[in-house]
Length: 139
Image (cartoon, rainbow, N blue to C red):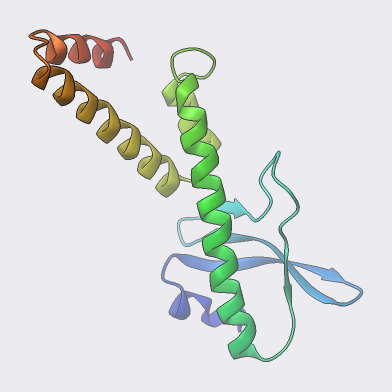
């Protein structure tokens, strides 16, 4: 089944399999661009996926598991964006997460910041846009 994963899941090349006494365990996935996404990133609980049962059932469960893992990684990435200027500069922060989730996290933060700027403009702040431009330039 592993050789057909790219047909079922567009961005996945293969899975990282590990043997267990009860069967096969999947501990992560490899993207077609050779990027690895672990199912249990550092600091997260152990979330390996156990392959068992009929192919149709475990592929459906695998899809749900991948969604859970990616959502968890995105939540963690979003939570750490508050430290961009303090602990971890944004250009270093990107390296901690897979590319697509780092991009989505950056877009979420950017949208929130720009929305806040427009709210300040509506409340009468005449320099809100210039202040935000200065913040972006300093990054």
